[in-house]
Length: 142
Ligand code: ADP
Ligand code: MG
Image (cartoon, rainbow, N blue to C red; front, side):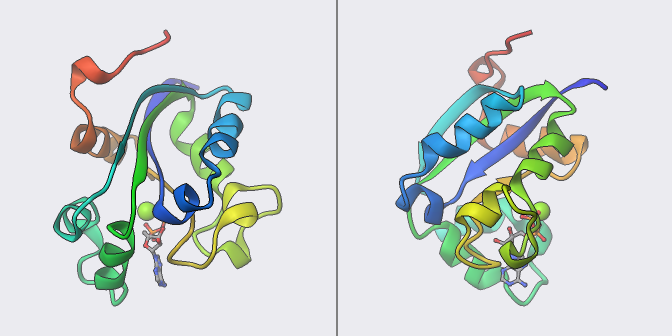
């Protein structure tokens, strides 16, 4: 297993619920380190650029509105197998299908307002990290 980096976003619903600390605790307790973090409030246009891969999906416009509805916390997580481990801690996209004890099972409101984003591959992680952070903003613990 390799040390990897992945992009995590605490989405507007979870920031509004004041569970940032609970979510970061889960990452740290499972061996992931936060090596960059920034709170920001995206415009709908910026959210649309981040989620451009979904632009043909029926939920795209609503997703952009939701992701720009309030502040988010963008983070880079680093650790062994970080991409898959983050996805495992997040749980399934639809909280009704998310395994008990996952972030989405415990906090998500709906399939849209599902508390967290996580990169789905090492390649996409690199692109997504670069969307929010420059090299000198990444503080590796290795
Ligand atoms: P994930 O975030 O688990 O990688 P996707 O990449 O498929 O899921 O979708 C990106 C985001 O779009 C989801 O996290 C969720 O906020 C939203 N979304 C996905 N599917 C739907 C849907 N069927 N209806 C509304 N929103 C959705
Ligand atoms: Mg995805």
